[in-house]
View 1 (tube, rainbow, N blue to C red):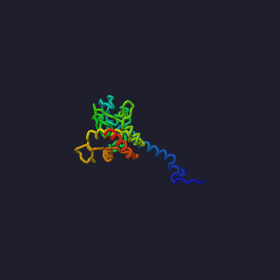
View 2: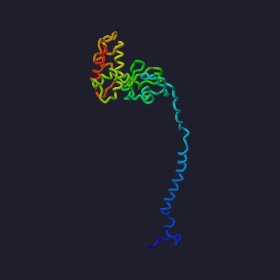
View 3: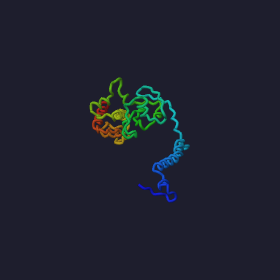
View 4: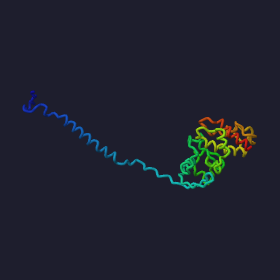
Length: 228
């Protein structure tokens, strides 16, 4: 096969001055490597604008009396009573449902009043007496409301039951103390009996997703009738 000669140099083939494909690729790769080196060094250097991680919050001593037993817990000020009970005191009977105070699964009795433990801080109850579902029984003997829940089949999955039991226990105490509800006809006096409407209203902060409301009302009614 004949080659086309360069007019300036008849002995030199025409394609001798053209770069080969291999040489072109090598040059391109070298150019990319040189361009990327400064960027790689810049990425390896720490940015001066990155803030250091926040320091851990200090722990505070929190003294609680839970189910008649003293506890001294070391907690952050932002720890909820619910988390203090479950994660630090090891009392997992109190359940974390919505964690927004809407379902009542975390209901406990603090200072004689039922509260949603997910909506309050543990440090706010220092020195206070707390009753959880583990503290309703006495010497391994179930409380009347616990027995009534079993007898009337007032629970199904059981997740909301600890909150229901604590709420019902406080409800009976509130009724005996003469506290009125939104459906009490005369708020100046205790209703003569704890009707189904009264129970439903007073238990309205506790949600049962299984729908055992009828049996819950029956259980509370039975205990109220025995204690009337």
